[in-house]
Figure 1 (cartoon, rainbow, N blue to C red):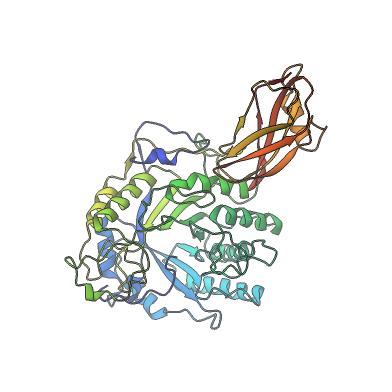
Figure 2 (cartoon, rainbow, N blue to C red):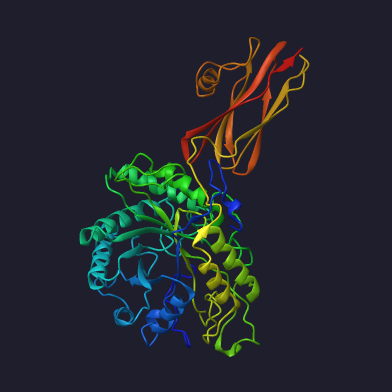
Length: 518
């Protein structure tokens, strides 16, 4: 989570909608009503002596509907509800109409590293125990950032394969079944996905898995399990900026994903689960068949840390040293307003929760609140309140459709006339996502070869004029291929078959204009 640990008890306890447009996107221009709700991810409600009544009233004043709070599980005392007294007190407090959502997560990253099956069973029993104790809670998040070593280990096997997704798939699937057995109306949120991941292997230290790759591995584990039921109603994601000082709406590089990259996650989810019992996202133009269900996003953590302004609050209320670059309060207010104005226009987003409502007093934690640690309002308080009040309609709702091609695929081919003496030929391909490429040169004396013929040749069929070359093309990058050989006088084309590594069935064939050798 960011931070994802036990929060210390406090002292007091479409603007950029165009940025969303991606491959296959479309949208209407007529203003429509939105269905998005807003809230906070905040444990201060648990620790407050009034059970959070003050904070709930503050949330209601902001126009917020949800508070997501943590429930931790210790594999060493698997049937003991941690912080039960705090949770009980929060559940008894007047919530001013704010709905409580609980995130049930292991307190130790190694909780499932040994005795895996037995511990998964114990965790699921705990999920059921918590849900039965607090029947007023109708939505649960299972786990927290399972793609990050800090919260789930191991992330990788010795051979570099992703282990964490397979473990988490079992945890989520069993938790889904347990909660639905209590009530089919309970909403189960999966993942709490970190927006970043370094994709470094075992032994790299703070290893993590990027969100796109983690979803792909999750889908692979799901398909291999043979499961015929869903595992989640909601895809829960965290959308922090790559650097704290960057805007929350700034796009992140593939395979990372922030608030401006939700199309990327929708495509990843489609790649992972289409054709299975797990619902995918509703697409633009799909009215929804009777009985059809779709997943939506819950952005349940997003925030920007702020520099403590000693003219606004007693700096002695905070302790420790800051561990990230910070922004001023006016910048935070602008970032939060921009985020609301962005995601309100995406019908796939059900909820946006800010992390936090009130600062943590330790600077090693998060000072991202709308309230300073003494309870006074930052400029972001009024900015968020205004943005939420105006979030009921959107002039240009964002649309999305899945694609079956390689996103951003393009070729750069030199088709100038070439002398018969030439012995080296170059072709270059580029993509917006990671892909593999098979490329070669083909005769075109009778016109450009048919696309299907080129596909077959590049996919192991009849040989091309020169031996095909292959290689990995990194996302948002290009790769050049150097052919050695002689071409007889005539007409030829360059051709390249690209396959998305996250879903090899998504392909793009690139064919140059004919060029002449003489």
